[in-house]
Length: 190
Image 1 (cartoon, rainbow, N blue to C red):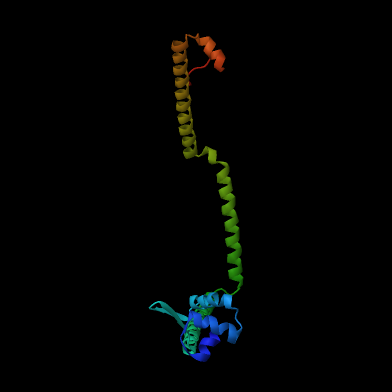
Image 2: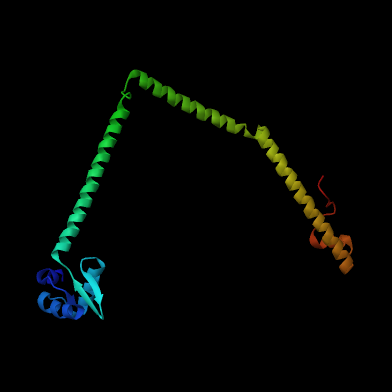
C-alpha cells in the first residue's frame, strides 16, 4: 500500500485507492479501507478532509525524515546510556579503593559478624522477659480494667432486661434466670 503512495507521489481519495490497490498491488478490495486507516493511525499516511472529501498522501521524504528523527533519538539514548555506564564504572572503582582484602579487614569483618550475632542473642533474651516489662504490665492492667467495665456494663444490661420482663410479663426472677441460663450467683465483678 505504501508503494502506491511512494511511486506516484500523488494525493488520493479513498475511492481512488480502493480502485488502484487491488489492481496494482493485489490487496483485497474489502480490506483496503482498513489497511489505509491503520496506516493513518500509525502516522505513515497523512489524511485531511477538504470539503466533503478525505484525501490521503504519503511522500518518501516524510518517511525518511521520520527514520532520521528516530535514529537521532536512539543515538542520543545510546550516548546517555554510555555516559551512565562510564559513571557507574567509575563509582565501582572508587568503591573498591580501601576495600582490598587484608588481614585487618578480614578480622574487622569477623568481629562485625560476631557483634551482630551477639546483638541478635541479646534481643532474643530481652524478648523472653518482655512480660515483666513495666510498660507491658501497665498495658495488661489497662486491658483488664476495660474488660471489667465491659463485663459490668453487660451485667447491668441483663439486670435491666430481667426487670423489664418482670414488669411486662409478671415472671418471677428465678423463672427468668432458669429460662435464659443465668446462674444464681450472677452479679457484678468487683
